[in-house]
Amino acid sequence: MAHTPLIAITGGAQADWRYRHAYQEVEDLGQFDCVTKANFYLDDIARLPDLLRQMFRSATSGAPGPVHLRIV
Image (cartoon, rainbow, N blue to C red; front, side, top):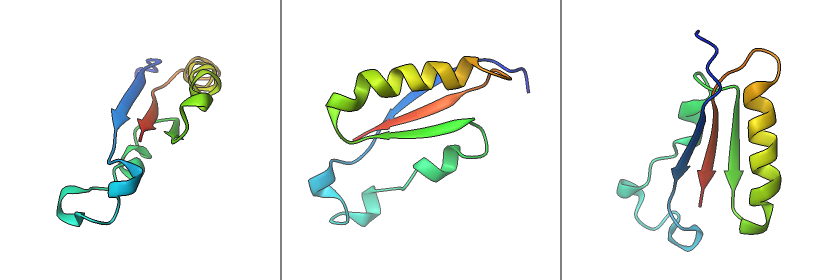
């Protein structure tokens, strides 16, 4: 509501651990939908520079707001 451009970076379970220990794994990407302008998912480190540019552009363009990046 205050239009603060915020970059939130969170971590997740490793790709080879997915679906093995379901009691420890919570799919949190969808939980950020209602409070962020955009959600991004990083599964390849080579995409990090492009995603960071896109995140900052999204957070500061139009009505500023928070964006989320999940690193796996």
